[in-house]
Length: 124
Image (tube, rainbow, N blue to C red; front, side, top):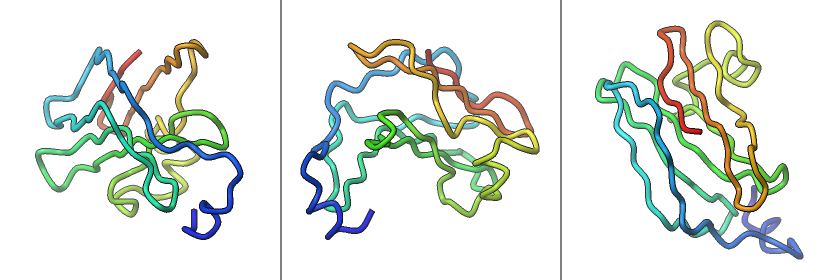
């Protein structure tokens, strides 16, 4: 979102706090980067966690809060490391852009990230 557009929103999230992940599976070729507090940037981006590949030939992933949809979205990191349509529309063995919400209060989401090589990350 553009900085000026975010500044004009009547209600906006200022960040995420007490972020916790109950990791069920993490591909050993990746490491998890997580902070329990993530303030919103001046454009409204709230980063939740990153999956950083140990090998730069593998795609990375960045999870962010989608305030409009009230959910977590996961994007390739960097964006161009996976074909946009393959990731967004979950084709060619890729899945995980959208998460499933289990509960509203507290907010609990199911996160499953897959590439053509298989499961990368799962956190219920």
